[in-house]
Length: 400
Length: 80
Ligand SMILES: Cc1cc2nc3c(=O)[nH]c(=O)nc-3n(C[C@H](O)[C@H](O)[C@H](O)COP(=O)(O)OP(=O)(O)OC[C@H]3O[C@@H](n4cnc5c(N)ncnc54)[C@H](O)[C@@H]3O)c2cc1C
Ligand SMILES: [Zn+2]
Image (cartoon, rainbow over all chains, first blue to last red; front, top):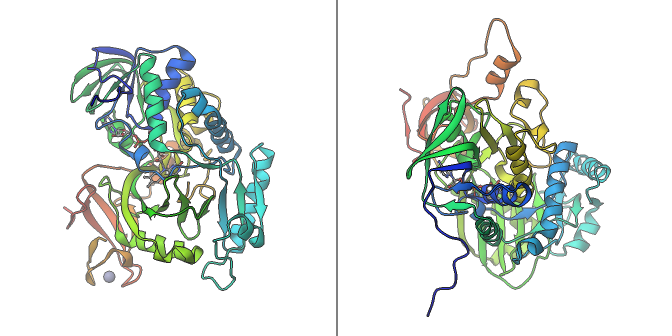
């Protein structure tokens, strides 16, 4: 038997690159791909301390949607969703992108008002959105318990029909294969341990595999961004938390849409293979431990059973956690830093998988032109000083 | 689940507590600038290692206190 062809080379680092991307998750890989494809920059390395896409990219619950409240967020997430709609063809890889519809449930009057407001805001921004009352929710997703005697009664929901899920591993592999084909070096087992900064400008990264000179350095390290930034003397408004998820054993098809509830901290879909995929809220404390408390999983399953009594006999197969980089306004931070040539793309927190192509697109543009892409501009680091926050706690909260 | 040592009640389960984030963030005094305000409100340490942090025994004696916890092993020790 012969091993099938590898999807990308496994090169040794060269002494110097035009752009060094730190972190080989979804965002790092998408950035490399668009640097090559949109801007012709191929003297680029992605440095990954573990293996490609072994961080949050491999741990998320893959929910994709763009129904965020504010204009700035709607614009960047909708740009991303439009890219998803063509990505399988473009990358010539079946990403199992399935636009099966995403429900965000409302359980109290506050939720109802927030949901309706968001539907209207979405429509004004050209993002598809509908408001469903409880009966319509039941029609769209028959296994939901909409009885008004439930602990958290379903009073309605927003629906984005173009939202859905994709297969995260396929997304990473497809982006990696294409970036590699353009000549980008994807270097695994290479941890960035420090930066060489000369006269306020970054000139190289120090790594577990030696010094690598860099024209520009682009952080795409998700939960570890603060640790890296600190080594460049930069303090950020980010906190790293565990975010847990779980899958059930494989079941017959029973749920054909995505259901999310901010109020009870659960979101669930059924993957193509048949397992129920459920996510929780973050564990409260700061951590880099890639694990969380069982009580968080317990609370999440209690909420799921309230909504879906039919799941009561499904068994949990495994649970896990990723480390997410949470920002004060639940929006990302994209753009230059106080160190010349050092760029940041972080703070996607609990919801950055959906942004993978959009984030890579605007970050690549920002790096290539040395000025923020218009869609990235509002997400600059200085908004925490100017006060121009993009507060997406309503649309993002724990949720995705 | 963490076991957290409340100074008044002794070791209790984590879900009796509310997390308060980094300890020792004092409200700035004197001339305020936007930069100083941003630093106070938003900027936080986020170390991989030992971290001084606040916990609130919300379902107990309602005391706020500081512990030192390791953000990888989750080991807790008296703050030093
Ligand atoms: C349980 C869970 C569920 C989620 N569900 C959803 C969801 O349904 N929808 C959604 O949109 N988002 C979701 N997310 C969020 C999403 O996964 C993240 O926002 C997104 O994956 C972050 O970007 P990334 O893929 O580049 O991160 P990662 O895959 O974490 O990539 C960062 C990489 O940087 C590497 N790195 C770190 N430090 C260094 C260093 N010093 N040197 C070299 N490399 C380094 C890491 O090893 C890692 O591979 C979820 C996250 C979790 C944990
Ligand atoms: Zn107490």
